[in-house]
Length: 475
Image 1 (cartoon, rainbow, N blue to C red):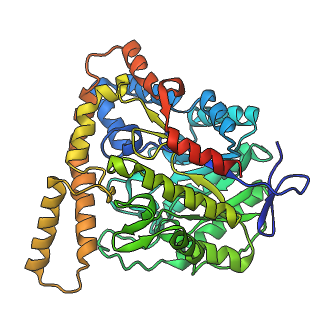
Image 2: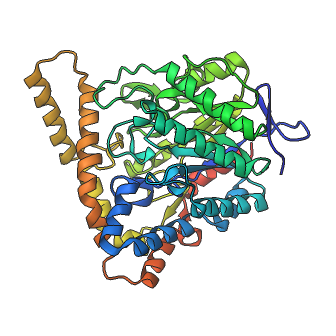
């Protein structure tokens, strides 16, 4: 495979030919997430609950088997058959380093990653390594394995030192490895989100992110001068206006472009949440995105690292979500953007491939999935009608505002963050021992059989979604 490089606003092969990086993110694998893998709350919390219930050895067996089946060579073969040129692999630092022994690296994590790189190399699919969860948490949300809403990374030098050192270790191991398209050094940074900041009026700390990005890029390039480095915008990869101009060769900038049209609820094209959504609206949103404007200003490549649509809203609206995605992909291709969609495999939300509803794993945790829905522990699913649990949280938010009589409180943010703390944090943590008890009394052989539900051969491609994707991968 060719070691890819940047030339102007293009990514090119060794012979100078442009290549479009288009494919999917493998969320839920080396960085697990509640809606993808089916458990409640944070990954580190649910791992601890299983270890407490069954012991460290059985818990390790359980999650190792889940990951073994979740992403295997069969999955790479399938993605290649669709026309993918790249997969983005989200990584949790905990696979490579422990908090009790910082700066000491775990061969088990690198062995799993190396195996996946071998499959991708064999079948000609490039890989972007994405540090999705960094030491100290770079953002406030579940997808950085964060259950606290704290972001210590931006305030404490210790975590930044570990982050840079871990990337130096990746650079040492993967220098010259052509299957790797490059290093996506940090997913969805949120630089200015201390615990007490309950507002949607966000102001990035541009000095902090520019300093960290320059430092980690310099450290990587001192070891590995050739691989592309992918840099994401602040505030969940949405804001770029305060970035310094591109400061090194072989930089690609990455935006995340989730839009209302892909989630609803409501018709597409049509009126959704008070706005008319159609192709023209989607193109306007894309062209006005801070990341699009930044990359055009400086003539560097744009990679839309995440976007997608959700299919667990009203069943009759699934065709609307597919039409919205169809338009969004057409716009990305029209304007020459690279892209990786979120996400490849999950339990009936966004995945290209879905676990079968009758599979042993889904059946074993059905009570958990129902409780998660009823209690809105996957709180971010704003396209789902509020449950009684979320309505009660909203009532508490209203009571707080009335009692405090503080006009500066952002009511929308107050409801959002209170729901996050109460439902995604506290309530989901309460449910983790219940998730563990779903597998009580099972032998390792039985656990293995249940976790085979994640294997590609037992999953179901989302046929309508795959039709849309295949069309745009072939474009």
